[in-house]
Figure 1 (cartoon, one colour):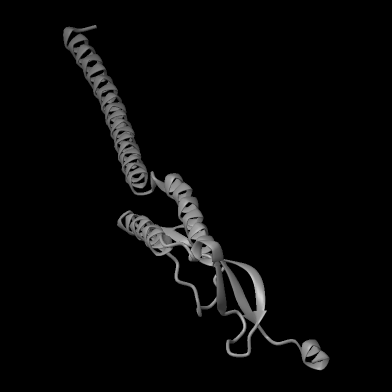
Figure 2 (cartoon, one colour; figure 1 turned 180 degrees about the horizontal axis):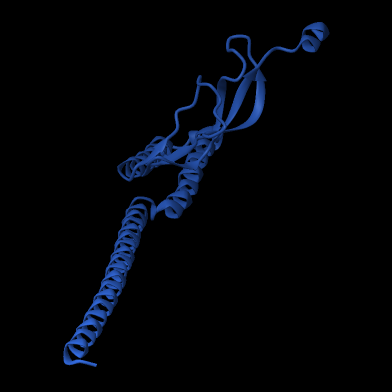
Length: 190
């Protein structure tokens, strides 16, 4: 072989190895780009997950502040109920009505009741006004049906126990009596 052939073979081998190196570099670049894209996707997912987790945490903290006293408020309703029962019982007692101190005692109970209701309202605990409104099972619990010619069926005509809301949540439903159509059997019997 001549020297020029040797040089050509060497050049060809150099070119081959250079082109192989280029191909390897391109493959390496493609894999590096793929790795970069993959890492970028993982990073974006991780950021999205942490953002979702932060939002959930913020929501839970907000709900804890808004409704943390929910169970306490429910317990306090029993105090109001007992106070109102005591007031009713005392005002219907004939022996106590004859007492000199009866009016003062009754006024003191009314003051305590008003203070308790005022405290409830300051803390977003509000009474559900239901009389003469359409029965809604989301806010009312029907305890009895009353025949009433003046009201159309399904209207609340009696409140047995007041219901309350705690902000936008139902704390306790109103126990109510609702109107119904007068039955024909009762008309025939009369």
